[in-house]
Image (cartoon, rainbow over all chains, first blue to last red):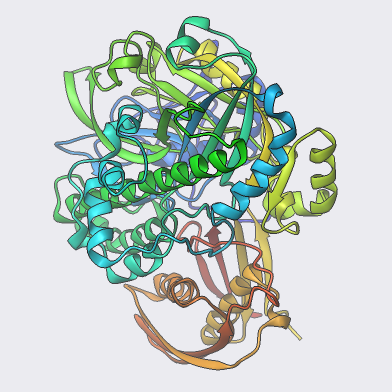
Length: 489
Length: 139
């Protein structure tokens, strides 16, 4: 990566440490607000080396940005916006940006719990992983068994998970454990192009490739017993985690709006430090259309995870010879970590609705927040943080400081440290598979040649990422989950 | 002879640096570079031909749109593409003919999903040695 040129980057001055876990990029040049990175010494040094900090500064130049351009500890260099970035824009003079959400709109994670101890069913886990890999279409360009006609795709994009449940994909209770009850309002399917439909209609219920996964996990450690009890989590428990997004539908929507908004930004007189930051005023026709189209992809992505949940339940029923209800395969929660949402936050000018962009960041509302499902309101919103396939994933809960420091946001994963080709050069796919299997982790991967791109070495230490968020008060640790079996695309 | 393209690296994503004696050639080589990330071009045969058109506000954006058109064709019709002949390259529009074949999972190992060609740090420039472009993909 060292040989790429960066002359169009915002130049930044020395960082100022403003709290034990937060560094500030002071305002300079075209920056309207400072940049702030939640980090420790090691991560901030790395972010500086790969110029992710300049990307945080670039976002600080966009119109109507409130308080600061933020980054979570899992920050790494992205295209346009850094991955791990959070930025909130005022309704009256702010912008909305497809690049600030990303191509994989509403990529997210859901955690399904069970009432089984992993140790009780240890012998069946390789069979379960095999069954999941047969049942859930995964891999590059793979099509699913759930083919949606035009009207059904419209229903899914506007009515989301509740519609899928009415069609038999899931349980009525599932909607109580999904952000916004499984349907983001304001979706307009008429704005979704035929091309986006082409790319999306065959992919419902498919995992996709890259960093997406389906994992069988064991709850290895519980940090907060009260919260764990509220979330239905106990030590040794067997859980299943799903990580995927809106697939080709979202990719195409983002592609089209980055193009449209490049022209819209020029017309609105917005000077873009990087063309990938293409954006439009929230209240402009392009801004409103993007939100209504993005909402379709958000509902599609949640629906994708819902169909997969249905397939996971079926697979467990087959392997454990019992009904999904008897196995207690309930949803703990479902979060999207690439999304823009209108939310009310405290600002210097009082409480205001802001357009909060999270690109590789998770909503993290604390106890008592009205947008948290009632059953969790006394403890805080569950936050699911997927790790890499060899280490661990976390269940966290939203915490108070997130509301004052990060527009109700925390980290979303481990964050890459190694490029994909560098990982592939350093690590052989078949060796990695053998090593993980020696650790007792069953792997089913579509491809071994590119499996190494997702090797644990390519990611930051998730324990440290989660610890920074815990110490900074953006989220609190509830449980650590260890992979027992992984299905990769 | 000048190499048609090389791969460049980014922490999360991958890019292509393509070379050519003209802008037209650079457009063709960037497409070949992108498809080399998806599957081994040696294993792809030219069985069918397809016409591709793209439009954008300027030449740099046109390069991104051209690559995104090809990704759409690849994903929506389950195709692998290999020969890219740009017939007409205007300032804001392009016409091309490409060839390839339907994906055969027995013969083709698909290495990656490319979500999109991005505008991030996009470069298209001329030097004394010819034309060069750099495009970053979201993978």
